[in-house]
Figure 1 (cartoon, one colour):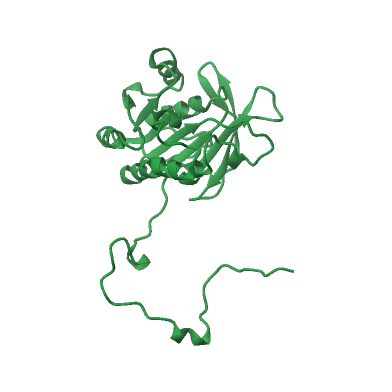
Figure 2 (spheres, one colour; figure 1 turned 30 degrees about the vertical axis):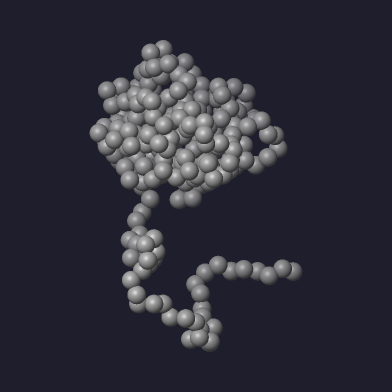
Length: 261
């Protein structure tokens, strides 16, 4: 039988007095006592799914409604409506910033927002950003509009080619500043990502690129077909660092985009 590790309060041994005492000198740059960092609660746009002030990644194959899901959420946010499971963030009608490289606003994004009953006066299109170099424009857009939700669709389209998202280091260089923007503004930032062609691997490993992409996010969701109901789909949480993992939710893709079940 192996050693069993119990995580919990630490009880010092009798010889703990031999341990070195901390210096009373001023701390060097970059070193902070944990006792000086105030604790705070995690706040949610959608409890269990999308935390405010954090980065969320939504994975899925093309054509499974990832974009529709985020625009459905945009509609709820701009109208101050409850989330699909009934959770009410209590924020009232708020703004949304959408950054998209694939869908046309006139014939796709706009009609989908209308189908989601969004207040389109509270949805803002942001163009020509670069991650991480141009994040100042994104942060300014969030501050100017008061947005609580930012959608980046797809995430990879706005990262320069010099950064290889299949390398952990490059992925962290790109996404750590994006997560910092979410933290400073308090907005929920959602990045959409396609999945790879791997089969029989854990859902956490299906997202295209380095595992560091999912690692940079505090919440990682995946959209996929429902194995038990043809023509139906499932949104599932595959990682949640800041709260309990919610139960999966079913949805279908209608002419107005997404219907939850």
